[in-house]
Amino acid sequence: MKTNVLHIKNNSKGFLDFVSKLKADKEAKIKELLSTFKSQDEQPK
Amino acid sequence: MLSDTVYNVLSKEGHRYILSFSPFNSVQLPESIILPVAEVVIATEDNKGFNNASTLFQFTAHIKDYLLVNNVILYCYCDNREIDRGKRHLCLTPQEYRSLLFEAMFSRTNDDGFVIKTIVLTDLNGESHFIKLISVKANEEVLDTAFDEILKMNK
Image (cartoon, rainbow over all chains, first blue to last red; front, side, top):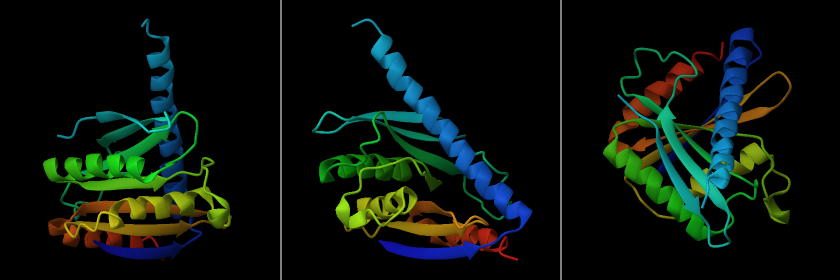
């Protein structure tokens, strides 16, 4: 398996908005998936 | 057209995980990226993390199957939720540790049919964001293009 690493350090507004969006979307997705556990637990067995 | 795909994974210790694949739509992709991009997310109810090799292999098997069935680039943002990482890796941030784990998932299976690329984005606050891009080896050029597109932000 081939791997590569790219490092970017940048403080422009566009860049910061970009990483903030990625982070926020990931957090929202995890929250959504975690709610699945809750609904599975609430289903009658 | 990609659709959402979800797998429930149970570790030997009884920890429950959800492995989710869904279309990536956080940002509009440049036209130069000619393949669809799907986001892979692994969620665990208790943040115990990947606690053994067999759990890792379950994830890897699902991810590889997904890549073999769907001609896509997989994207993963390594999040900063706390994760059990042992004494040896306590010096790493949760994001960095997840990035290493993700790579370990693939390297341990010694499969040359896949390419995984890591992008580390460091912001004004010094926080590093780890992103993984994965695909089958035949799509390596498209992954390189995605690399180049992100590199354009570094101006």
